[in-house]
Length: 370
Image (cartoon, rainbow, N blue to C red; front, side):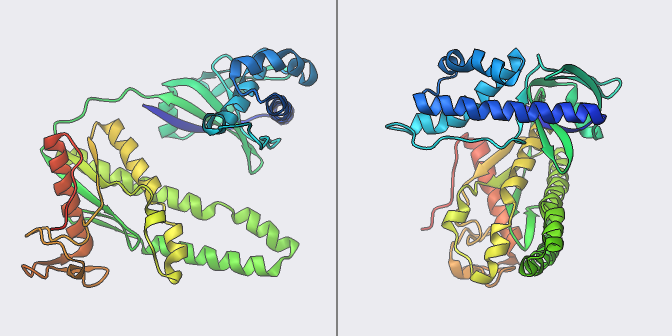
């Protein structure tokens, strides 16, 4: 399984300039390659290599492998459109001068014993220190393939691809259903839930701050907006990491598999009130699901994706499905048997049941309203 480890480079002043020069030159080369590709309507990597390789090396002073990676970046940028296009592509791709560029294993090597790396620049290889967290440090032992160099907030970073061997899946006897939501970010069929009030509080605070600063339109307000950019996103990412880790740890501790709703395309299907739109659009449920899946793979915990239809309307006790069963956002009372429970827990139990059926039959199953 491929996992990305992010590290922060610590170059000296001269090395910083060389990295910036290299990043800019590679992106300028990408723009020139893109112009040639667009003019000739040639998006195949090998043919594009023959058209541009020697000219790019001469014009921008790139090393051989840098030129190859620049050509690859342009070819990948056009790949999706080229496959779908029935005629000539009418939009030329352009690249930001500080956009990320790929470095393969021939251009970069790591020395984990000294937290340093050797990276290729326009002036040859440079050895520099890097900073990395404990979890990412463990991943770097499995580094394989490309690393993306990018510049953000005045610092250089590398996203390093690491090919982690997946452990064998545990033999599960139980199933933990996970209901993802907005008020309760995640509710487990075991009864444990993760409240979304703190996330919503941070969201409202940042939204009010952004609105006030945007109205001022002063230079200082714009500086503050730039400074606070991404702060809420990082907070939500951290919360999702914490929640997903606790869910996977609980599943591994109890020898259980995990069942999740397949919520692909929910923003297109689901309608919410105007007052809820900002909260709904900022709901990072997909990220949380992805975190649960990849952490479960690393822990050897099986994960099943089940259809979400009627999981919030179905009574877990008798199986009766009716919209009126859900009295309020949090209250569930079955109109048939009278069973009452927290609505999110009832949904999580239904999800767990679907996960058990999928595990037993080896196919995706869902509830059908009679």
